[in-house]
Amino acid sequence: SVPLLQAERKRNSLNLLELSEAELEEQFVRGDGPGGQATNKTNNCVVLKHIPSGIVVKCHQTRSVEKNRKIAREILQEKVDFFYKGKDSDVFKEKKASEKQKQEKKRRAKENLERKKLFKEMQQLDKE
Image 1 (cartoon, rainbow, N blue to C red):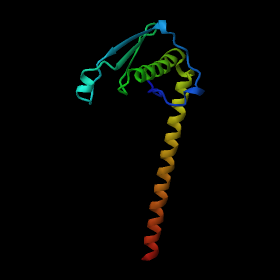
Image 2: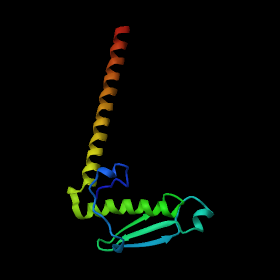
Image 3: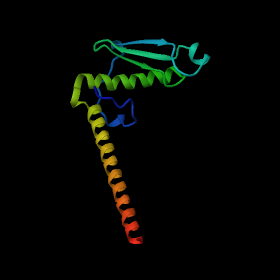
Image 4: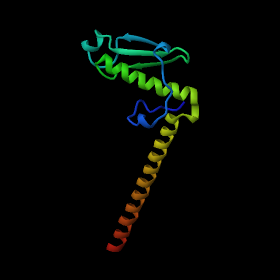
């Protein structure tokens, strides 16, 4: 499985499938992780399920229930889009493009490091 964009801000350009509220099942549960009493006593973690596909998303990124609901819907929309469209999904294409850019950046950095090593070796030889 391919990791998705997780609601990156480039969503305006993506052509995602629309979700209807009738297809969603929403629950509010206690979150986990750091936060102590604030986390242990509040139900601000959103669990969102897309009933037709069975995809479940859990979001507890902020303290605000409303923000978590919005983020969970964005993430679920990306996952549902990938589920139905597969490799034709804009989410998949965007992820592949960003991976390719990352690999290219690593390759250039490695080349620059090699050039610097050669340059230092040449300087050492000139000194001797």
